[in-house]
Length: 320
Image 1 (spheres, rainbow, N blue to C red):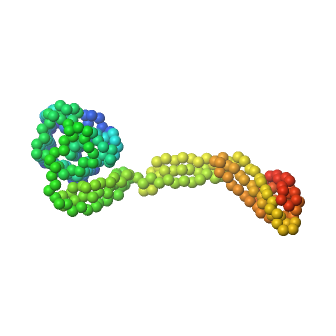
Image 2: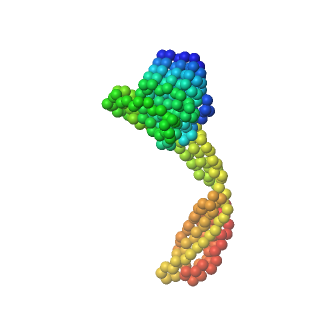
């Protein structure tokens, strides 16, 4: 905008931005402020959040013209950046691209947070200038702040914090807003007297869970990542129907008393996913016994020798 905005009050706003170019931005009142643009006596409360976006300010995102003015404005809320690519975050103005900006009698409160990833261009009043000249040419007068800044500036010219004030002894309370499938939620601790936010934890959109149905010999299976709230599917991977690739049989004899022995026969199926299914039959036999035995769907011939040896074993056929 390049005109004038006066006496505007916005309450409980929620703005969200993706990556933004150098001459664009996101602000509570204006995305950008052009040559001779003025914003006076405006107030904003709420949340500005970005995924990798830059130039985020409580009142103005980016100043892209000379001799602009921000006077008597307040922002009391949260500026949250959840990826390390975000930069130029300010309680009043995010990025100053042109000379001659005046910021006077403004106040910022709440929290400005890059969620633990640091930040070179972050300030409680102004995030920073494109270079030394744009920041040095700006005039900051009587700007106060009680904003919590969970990020550090790499150099003084890259962020302006204003005069810190804490007029309230604070009564801290906790508020939780559950995420929906369209908007982030949060848990925050804030002062019920002045509204200052002590801490804030973002609750992501969607509640992703894994649904898994194993493949069988008669049907495909799948692994699906789906939101348990709205049912949106994030990914779906088919697990192909299993095929039988190998069948083998084995047996051993355990000697008992007299001419009685115990015969144990095992049939092992191996499938295309390298899993196995095992069928076992145990029975009593006499010395030197031989015979056919049904195990699952298979017929196995076993010929024993003496009381503890296997002379021959053959997986003979499937039983239909």
